[in-house]
Length: 444
Ligand code: ADP
Ligand code: MG
Image (cartoon, rainbow, N blue to C red; front, side):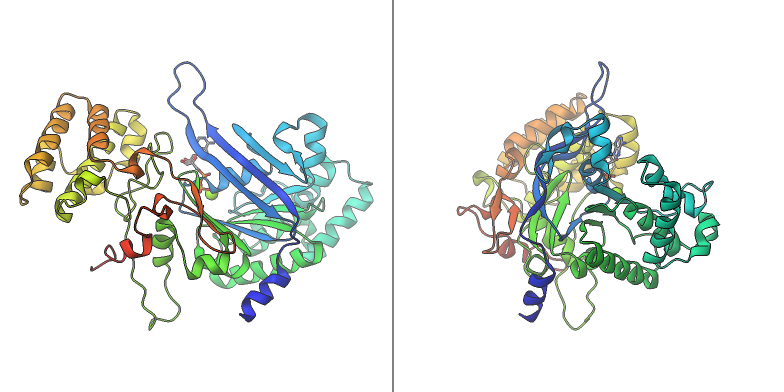
């Protein structure tokens, strides 16, 4: 309880600074011969309050950096709006955009490559001041000295080069540069991921001190969930371009409601080994954001996926084999999409199966498969053999797919404090996720 009270004091003003609505950021996809676009951010909505630290977590490739870059207009939104203090910044251009940019800055993950090695540290930090014609040359020089000291560096560091610094020091330079123009909002894109653990803590303390001193609002991006827990007021969990769960950090970590959040959190090593939590292992790999699932983005890997009515009583082993076959066929049809995706994304587990008949024997050979299931499997196999994996994928989805495979979920409120989770399981007609997942944990 004391924790909750403390949070209340450090947390936001209750005033919205950044308001994101129906935001999409796609890469490519235009042009006559283009392949489908990469849907890096695919319809997200959230608000960040002034003064708060808002966390964004999820596995590599789920769209975190793209979202962060879109919020500071380093990336152009494909659709939707990003309002900053009431102004839709996706509509700004020219001098208006340049003027606005002062308000929002970004700190990058890799202090190694994000700093220009041919410029001195002083020049790097001064660059945004020069670009904005900030005051006089002498003022800028003085401002840089002041910034060096704010981030824990010394005046004599002005004439050094980035390569003469450690990773932690370089990240301090990146932070000084981001703060040069006194922004209100800073996107921190995995600011400590590349640093040693001992250095991480120092940089995080620095970021917290700077936030208090300059009333900063942060979007803190991380793939490491344990970092976020300690510094973020609220957090959003992202998967394949979509926010799966969003709400108060402590509450979300204590009692996650979305199956994806539950799986992610179950994988964090616990500080206290006597408290055992059942680890949930997700099958397969995330689908390509060029070809996301038709229903829930997480449906191809979700351990709590809802079965269609007709197969509610099918034996678990057989059902599992059907799901695996669908995954194999899905991968096959993706391979015809793009050869680079094919090489990169192919599932290790299935790459040794050279033809589909063999896969089916491996999956179903030992099981007594009901005729109804077998007929559909046969039909799908014939389609694959005819070189129509996409048709086989559709056929299997139509036959064996439930609501999760066919329909996008909505965001449902899952706590009194307003936390939301994107999952069909929150509808009254389905069993809730925690009950279902209890059957799927490792070793069960
Ligand atoms: P994260 O930061 O969570 O690792 P990113 O936002 O970097 O994720 O990437 C999301 C998806 O967009 C990935 O599939 C990635 O390959 C793709 N992507 C990122 N940047 C580009 C780009 N400039 N062009 C095309 N695809 C991109
Ligand atoms: Mg990233």
